[in-house]
Image (cartoon, rainbow, N blue to C red; front, top):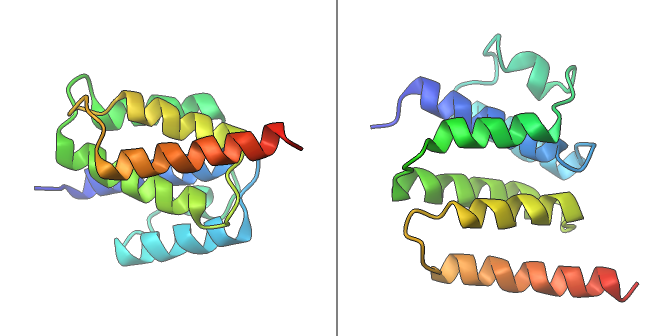
Length: 137
């Protein structure tokens, strides 16, 4: 059972992930607002300043919230939901910044199954392609 607090934590992590490269892209902004609306949190007083980019969120806070959300022993369902939503956010603008790739890599290390799923393998392949394209520039 997912609580409202748990959902709010997930949305906060998404907002922080959007800030991980220093700015929120228009596609990321649209994604964040759509998720907040779907989850019934678009008018939440705690999330409002974060959603409207009144408060930039440092990368350290993103990683702290990730750890709090998953805890020491994350369950597979929470982990997969987090990985899927962060991936959708990061890939929403068609560009993966180095900081975003690092976030996905760090998140993969927290996989409770401790094995490569098909989804994780696809993400890794995309990350490797992106990293190669950066190094070739």
